[in-house]
Image (cartoon, rainbow, N blue to C red; front, side):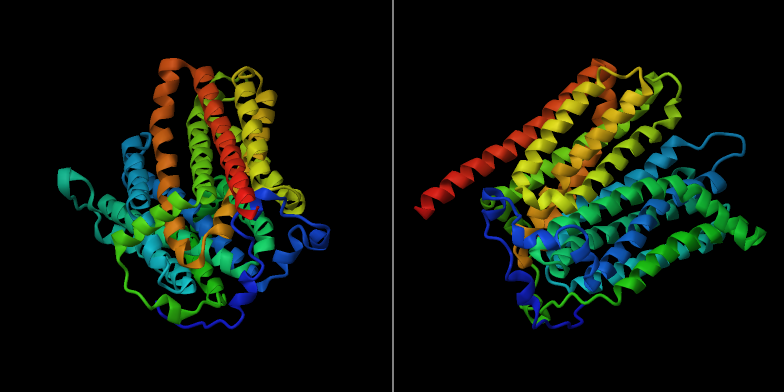
Length: 470
């Protein structure tokens, strides 16, 4: 992964980056920038458009992949007339999660030393190829068993899932680092807003249309393709490959000579990332807030089943309606941030968002019998979550030096995946012991704590900077 793309213009992308404290000491908005706010500047940026296109197809493929695995388990390893085994589905989910917890930081170390475009392109092509060979291995392994009499085909699905997820750990920090290379600092908030909107839309659309789209693809290709699942894998693998093809046209303008100067010292580099977070309070705090944000949403995704069960008029299996409301609120407010977010500092937005999330979570604990009030509360919570997620991700991008981005985003990937995993295990247990209302209030307290912590650290740093200036 050492293809060269030298850059004589890279300085132009970094000349306008803010000083370390500027994003918290004053709003990132001025009258001179008013004509350039919103999505227009980033949508005129061809490099961002290419990266965005690759992101759309890659993220949809990620969502379709999990739908594909569940469909394959149901069609190949489930007795007709019996429900799908939840333990087998859990095994797939665990196989998908383990690389995220083990490789996030390690992947970030190498991403710092590799050309980001190569990482983005190659990871998508390999993931696409791995998905496309699934029908062949399922056909070859028919009737064969492995350890504990498990079907060999199922073991193969676990292995493929592990490999696909491992490659995703390299794609994620490379994508974040490339965004900072492709977009000027003053447009990072708009770019992050659009990226966040895309992520949430992909989450909603991917899971909503995944099953019918994969089934339609099988029917479209005929009975033979349907029996071998060629249509399903063609959609998922094809989405990864399309993402790779789009990203082939990306120009990151990286200086490869700088990237190749050092050989990786994995554990030392991971420690460098940790030390950087320890010394840069704003970046560290942004990471803490993102971890809290994802923890709250992960817990809510579990509690949504219990919440749906308590609401007259809907079933527990329709909990996706509640999560979709949160995604819609987040996506709408992320788009609004692109136009008016630069009038305020990232710390202001984060504090308001955390307070709003806390209020919505507390309100949610008292309106569990009304579907419309629950939908409004969750949608508003998603809207306030955008005020936390978008500015904090922007802070990470704007204040992390180029040579540290892979390490920091790798650590972020690790932390966020752990933040997504623990609440999934703990939220249901806590709800059974303490009740839904108590857990929602605890989540509200956690969200409020993150906002106050961010505001306090920013205020302390501002006072210190003022004293140094004097």
